Amino acid sequence: MRPLSRFALAAMAAALTLPLWAARPGEPAPDFTATDTYGRTHRLSDYRGKFVVLEWQNRGCPYTRKHYETGNMQRLQKQWTARGVVWLTIISSAPGKQGYMTAEEANQYFAQMGAAPTAVLLDPQGTVGHLYDARTTPEIYIIDPKGVLIYQGAIDDKPTANPEDIKTARNYVDLVLGQAMAGQPVTISATRPYGCSVKYADE
Image: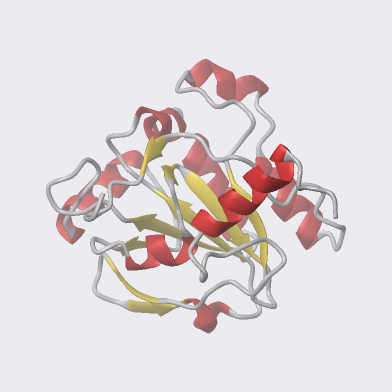
């Protein structure tokens, strides 16, 4: 029996570090319940039959600010919700840590930024974040109408905080939703996310 290569061993080690419940492209997206900034309850299962985007957000992160201060994230939110996509922005920052916002603060911030997600979900205990093993802000997950995760990773292929890079970036949200909604195979289902670490309470 041949010994495993160092690449195979590395892959096994990486897999073992993932929570058993972590979402993986091609598998059912874990259901969750969360409250938005207006006190309304949202269950992922309530949106079966629709495409859903989960966007992890931290207003203090320069990588997140890159996409909000240029209007790039708002463009995506408006473009795809207009086509029936449910867009859920999730804040998993714990109290006292970068990016944490109360419901009132979040409503003021997103109104000021002209953001247009379907809802902003507050996750200060990191329950939803850990369920999906979200590691960075921004980080994107896309779920199809059958409840299957079809994409996980970066928002685009320019892993910098430089706003100028948006002009030449390949945007994975546009790519994946464009292909999936046209009934085409998704050509890129996972990428390495970039940004600031999610500021969980236990990290």
